[in-house]
Length: 130
Image (cartoon, rainbow, N blue to C red; front, side, top):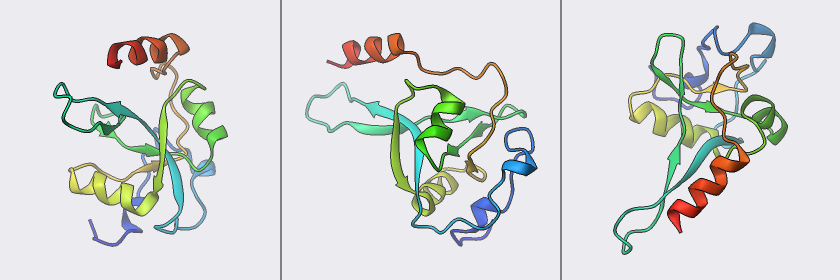
């Protein structure tokens, strides 16, 4: 894989992103995208919380990083209780690449049965970390 920011968007998993929904042009590295994520709190109170990016499972069983170009697209795919963070797509793609993951899937159409956060999940998580 090339080290340029655009290369993570050269390939798309056909099981996650139908051709009609693939971006028509390369995405600029500083474009902000919404990424499924949630805070992770260390057991040691002296350590700061971190962000845990949520990966989906691809058709081949491997983890897949996803990002969305609008809140409406994220909600349509993962539901309105999904926690997320906004980050530059180039930075996110680089982090995923550096951690051994393939291309980031942008605005994927997800197969039925993908687990989504519910309002109850958010309440339970919030109570657990307080």
